[in-house]
Image 1 (cartoon, helix red, strand yellow):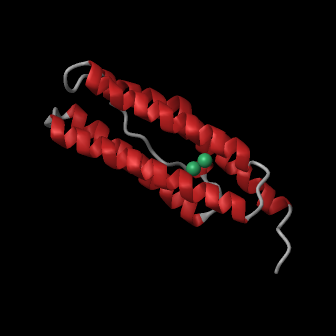
Image 2 (tube, rainbow, N blue to C red):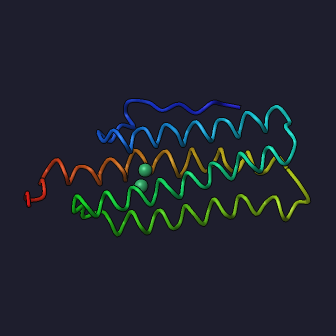
Length: 140
Ligand SMILES: [Fe+2]
Ligand SMILES: [Fe+2]
């Protein structure tokens, strides 16, 4: 199973957001490694919950920040974050529907990282900060 890496081309230029993105990738890797090593279900669930909780915190912090800097992408971000929260919840629910831990959970999470979260960092989060570079809000 591949380890996900934060790369410089994902950088938004905002220190807090970039460090949260790194932390998200780290939580995801920890879960995937635990799954790969066949850790017990309680440990895996705990690890998945940490990832999910941190994702929610990150989305909330980002939306606050985009509001503060007056990013025109705020609505787009809110919509995308809501979709991704639902997708994570759907991945978690694979547990319930399959009587315990199944390979589908790590597989679905890997696909979600590749096709949803990392592209979101790259395309949407970076773009939301372009507005700040282009037109700084007036000082109060
Ligand atoms: Fe983000
Ligand atoms: Fe975002």
